[in-house]
Image 1 (cartoon, helix red, strand yellow):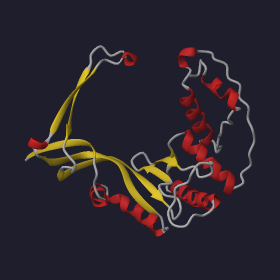
Image 2: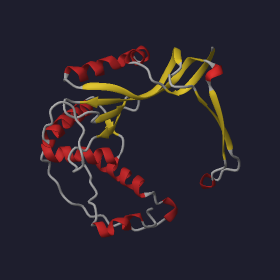
Image 3: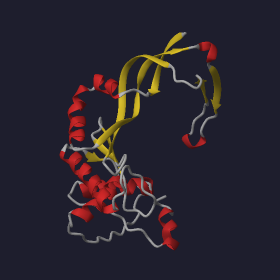
Image 4: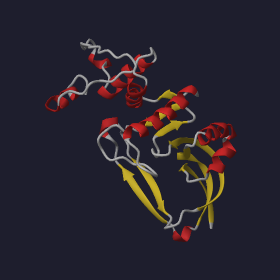
Amino acid sequence: MFTVRVKGALDVGDDVIFRFYPEIRSLMNSIKDRGWRYSFTDIVGRAKVNLNLNKIRFKLTYYPPRIERFEEKGSYEISAEVGEKPPAILDVECIESFKISISTEHAWDCVSIDFFKKTITYIRDVLWNGPRLGGGREPKKLSEAREIYDVVKFLLEKGYKFENEYVIENYKKLVDLFEKKHKFTLTIELTVDREDMVPGWSELKDSLSKFFYERGLLMRIKRRSKKNIFSIFKKPIP
């Protein structure tokens, strides 16, 4: 057997997270007190593991320089196939990042947060017409949306912010349902002045959404008709 240090995605229990970040216990207890559940996802860290070198298959891969990034040289990568069972973790040295997924009675993994950035990274849109995922009995979509709304409100009270405009837009749908806020339509006509400074479409929407949210407004860009949907991707805003 050979002991090596690995850095990257780790599959560890809640006790390991609490060992490195005991201050998170109060938030987790508050989540459980409300009848919700949580799970740690996307855990990244560094650990010592035991490897049997006789059973490992190594693979050497060459990546040519990427033209779109103007790279002049390629790079090599060594990967290892360790078999059907994961290697034994001897010691977790650090946890660098992770996300927390929150589930309610009927809405599994409906809200995700980044504990380090204190941001809400995902809100499930239960009002769309696709299939739903849930546990236990199946409620109406409105009841499920109410559970998600309560989770988001709880996190906002804890000081969490929205990560991007997609998250804000899904939150706006919940606010429109349960708070009956005043709504109005604002038409903006933009003219390109300096093409080298024009951002991509996704970046522009994200910036506008955050701009309005910081001023107490929730923004949603209305979709065009299907026959014109691709016109928004034309230059100068790709």
